[in-house]
Each structure stands twice: as structure tokens, then as C-alpha cells.
Amino acid sequence: MRRMWTVAGVVALAGVALAGCLGEGDHLVGSTLANGNAVPGLWHSAGGDGCYWARRDPFGNIIANSFSIAGPQYAEVKPTDAYFSTSGCAVWVQVDQAFDTKHVITTFGQFADGQYRVGPEVPTGTYFATTPLSCYWERTRDFSGDFSALIDNGLNGAATILPGDVGFSSSGCGIWTKVG
Image (cartoon, rainbow, N blue to C red; front, side, top):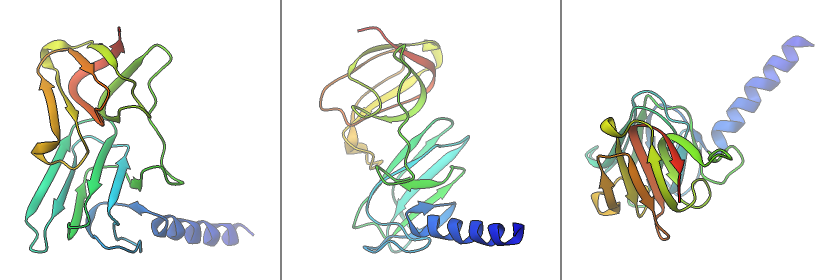
């Protein structure tokens, strides 16, 4: 009986890969979700120490990329991308699908470094960080990794997230607390 459960577990894990989960490596971007392939859209990872991702053209050239040392991460795969590459990250899942989990701030209005969606995870408002001297933050229009996605950024421990912002990310800031 125990062996039967092990086989069922392996089959279930294979189904997870088909259901929209991506591990390390290069993933072909296509319109149909298949094992190891990425479909265009927003993807989410719990991150990891040294989490890196890149959107690539058919020749392997980097279109846009991102690197983070901690916290949840997002990547917007575009229909024009040929490959999505990742290393050092936890498993990637499609946003708002069965295996996606939102990283909601605490009841005290606090959250740690990483990337967050404004609205579903982090509300608009003014925040202060616990380690302002080593802090870098960004407000973004999307999670494409394109320079044009950047709305504003700073090297301090104070940030105001505004309506219309899609993403907020930080590194080296510690814990953010909402103050207004």
C-alpha cells in the first residue's frame, strides 16, 4: 500500500508541472502550457537568496532581467519572448492560479524585502523601513523587468506607494511598516 502512495505522489508532482509550475533552467515560451514551458503572463516565486530571472529572445540574448537577494519575486513573460530563464529561485507559478499564494502584509501593516503587487498584497500608503541606510526600493508599472516599468525609486527608508502603481520592491530595507 505504501508503494502505491509513492507512485501516486510522483504522478501528482508531474501534474503540478503541467499545471503551471517552473523550476530552474531555460523554459520555452509558447501559447500552450506544457511540461517545462512558460506561457505569457505574470509568474510568481517565493524567491530565494540570489534569485535571478531573464526574458530572452530566440538567440538567447537578454531582453530584461532581475536579481534579488530575498523575498517573493514576480516576472511578466511577454508573448514576444522566446525563453524564460531562472536560477536560484523557488518554483515559479502562474499568478492567481491554483498553486499561487499571495504574500499579504501583517495586521500591523508590515512586510519584508521582496516584490509585491500593489492592491492584492500591499495597500497604497506611506511606509518606513527598519534599515534605511542600506535600503533600495522601486515603484513599478509592471513586472516586465524593462527599465520603462520604473515609476520611482529611492535609496532611503521612506516610500509612498500610490494608486496606479502595480508593483513595489525593496532590497536591504528590512521590515516596512505602514504609517499613513
